[in-house]
Amino acid sequence: MVIGDLMVVLAQLCVAVPIMYAGHNVFKDAKLFPYILTLVDSYGYLSNMYFGLLLIINRFCIFCIPRINGSVFGKRSVLRPSCKGAGDVARSFSRFGMYEGYVLPGIMFILYIAVLVKIKYEFRVKVGVAAESQTQSTKAKMELRLLLQSMIICGVLQIEALSFALLPKIRLPMPAQGYLNVMIGLLSLVNSGTHPVVLFVFNTDVKQGLQNLLKKGTTVQTLSMSQSISVKKPQANLANMSRRRGTVISVC
Image (cartoon, rainbow, N blue to C red; front, side, top):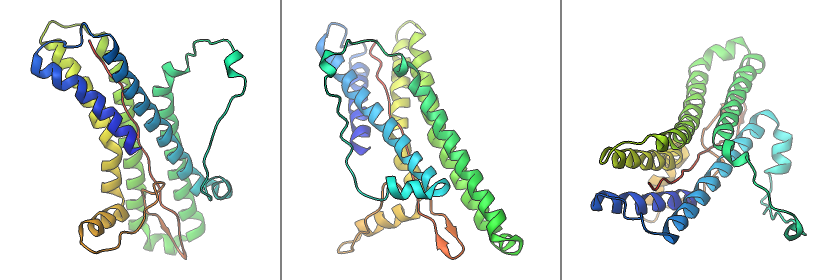
């Protein structure tokens, strides 16, 4: 995920900085370099998109279907997909890539809502009325954190995807067109930094780990990347969780 963010940021900086200093499209006559930047940016975007979806699925399994979570995410494993004989298959254009930037963030938001409903149901049914009244403040804060995190991450994903789809179609005279392109790039950078910011703001373990890292000679506790929100239940601690997305490039 960190590598994907760096790929997106690098591609955007390679486009925005030269254009801002030159005052015109410096890549107008270039042929190979824009394709390289687009490739780097696309790989960073897709890696963040799918890895973020994987983290949300992990969070959903932790709360809603723990048995599957134990069997699927309980062990360290490496997925190595292979397709024998793919060279003999005719290539065809797939339209799935045209919609994944809109569909996957919506799926992520639905999974967040499902986790929120599950947590609310468990507190109401299993904890009891008396205990629920005592832990009402803690439960409210936990639900608010979960909802805010889902809204921030999925909201930024949707805004960035829509801006990349709609804003490049707007044609303005220079220098307004240049500022519009810069704004698209800035939205991509904001989107790339959303997940680290959410982790730092909502996860106390990440804050503590950063403090330990900055303190000389202090042992840093290893944090799981599938953690982002600490949720406590009576007589048991539920596992923590997390999530995020990437960007695309526009060279006009």
